[in-house]
Image (cartoon, rainbow, N blue to C red; front, side):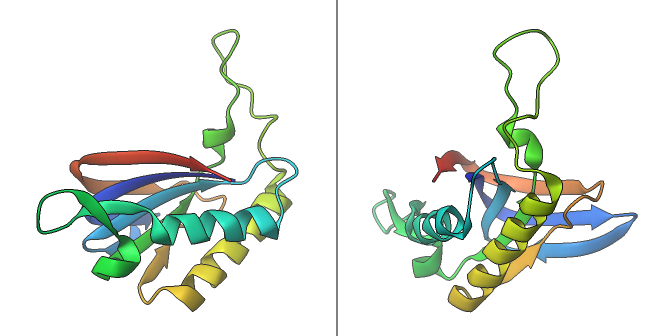
Length: 145
């Protein structure tokens, strides 16, 4: 699985003019399942994400995790993270998990995140979403399990 995480001061997801997820300070995470991914990869990625130190300590160094600072998570499904862009001018999405598997793994990831973290919001798998965020830093990292 792939996660593109962005440290934010706020973020939201809108579907058909309705805000379906909104957070204050924390991480906005774009998630993608790739072919062959299982719950094992999802769980490993979640563990890394919750412990990844991207928030500043008292000395201004990135030493604190989202769990440590009590930040929120906004999880947004985005299959385009798996795009193969090595040739041509049109991306191939063959590395992405099929939609049914992608949905299952996104839901698993979100469910496990809610069990381990107090503030978790999500986007909607398969929907056309408008994502708004204020990137804090900017701080953006690409994680893969």
